[in-house]
Amino acid sequence: MTQTTAPAMAQDLSRAALDARIVFHDTLKTMEADFSNFDFDTAETVNLFYDRLEERIAASGEDKWFFLVNLNGTRIEPDAWYDYRKRGKVLNHAHSMGSVRFDASDETRRQIQRAANTEAFDPNLFDNRAAALARIAELPSTRKTRHISDQPNYTQREIAERITFDESTVIMSADFSNMTFHHSRDVDDVYDHIEARIIESDRKWFFLVNLNGCEILPAAWVRYAHRGKRLNKAASLGSVRFAAGSETEDDIRMRARSQGFEPNIRNTLSEARARIEEMRSALLAEIS
Image (cartoon, rainbow, N blue to C red; front, side, top):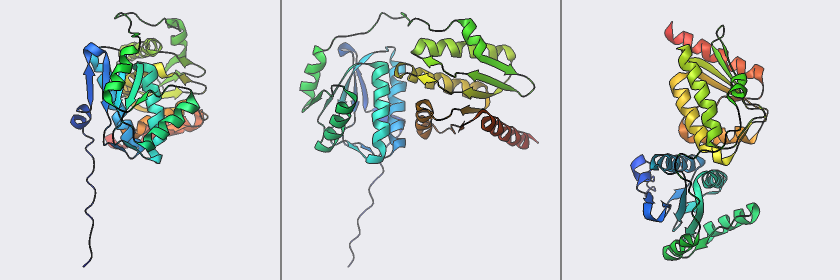
């Protein structure tokens, strides 16, 4: 008689299930992420979880938190490790006043320690939750008073020179070439300007975005992703980006895995314009 093994049940990745693993301890200024017995089996799973972490932090009303991470029984598969490390780094730079981890398995501990040695950060790994909380109590709070903004790096004139609208082709071009988004203020200044001009135009546009030499620093990434997603949903007929290979391109492709959009990144301007014409033809075919 042949013995069969029951298939493993898929883990619950619903919003409710992920939310149950994210708890904010207001008095401790601590966000607790419960990765216990969770399998980061694919890059998409990593990005789904981190997307929700970002959304919950944005909804919390506070920009900075201590991070307390339960790694008891956590698995991070080799194919997911790159995205796990990258998304964690971005989230920490943007929102963490200090990250402390506890109960890591030997395998996960080794993965994190290798990353710490390579990237020169303190992994703050402890055997139990009490010790991790004691470590958090030693860390200084760096929360700022509400409504204190980062200093802007670009004037409205500089931003306006980078945004053009071609009515003959219905293309809005955003020239982010050799531009650095240092923090949320830079992102908001640029997207506030774009949104205002689109509202004034009273129509939707194709978006053509030049990312050659563009840098989106970790402190800006969460806001950049949020504002870009909101603008595309509200006002885009289709968005195409172009860059001749960059870390920014890699980050956009990584987030696209979980957020269900086609990144439409091309190497050159001519290729990007050709892609817009394909999208235009598809739209015309839909309405004809």
